[in-house]
Length: 274
Image 1 (spheres, one colour):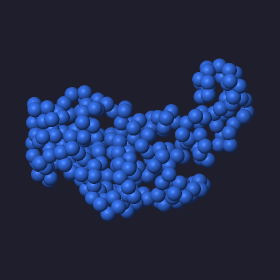
Image 2 (cartoon, helix red, strand yellow):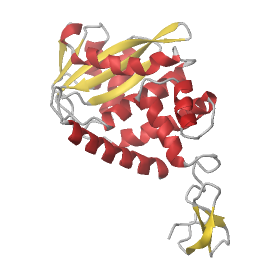
Image 3 (cartoon, helix red, strand yellow):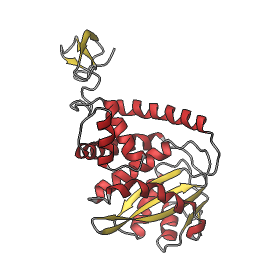
Image 4 (cartoon, one colour):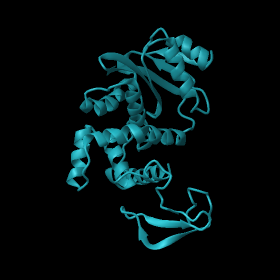
């Protein structure tokens, strides 16, 4: 039996043959005498579509090169009628929480070599800087959007990454910006080696393209907050769905699809429990 979201009692029962307009079974709490369903008390309670559809909308928006209008049109073909503004609202409302749940699940030890770089993102005509990092296996370290490219921004990025890591790296490879040596020594310690590498030899440079291809259809961002949540959500989703254990590893199509299906089911359950 489900726990009552109102009084948290376990003394509940299902109301037989009674469902909500979306088909969710109704439950009744014998303690507080109130009815509820599995979405009561969640952010999805008053939405007019099933939670699975919201999940699929978020997945399409973050995973593929689609604009808000593209996503709305795809679901219109499936019989769900909502505007591109609804897609935008759901993205702004649920993507940050979605990304945070994924981020909290991947706290682990990564490789001992980190590749860090920043890429440009245009927000209302102003260039901002997206700090990103991967390890030698291609796994995401973290991502952080900053309005400035300076020592404070670099230190904030490394502090954010350090929260996820069980152990520090042996070496950090960057493009040689003047802020990195001091940021690495102050945040990660003097024992961590700093190596400067040209862009063509830094694998993180190639991984920038995946993110940029996601926000090109929207023609930029309206503000820093929107850009921050979108970039983080895209990166976290891509990392969670990453099948390869190392860069260049071959994964057959059947195995790829099986793993993606399993991870999508896990994401769907995670979203319902949010």
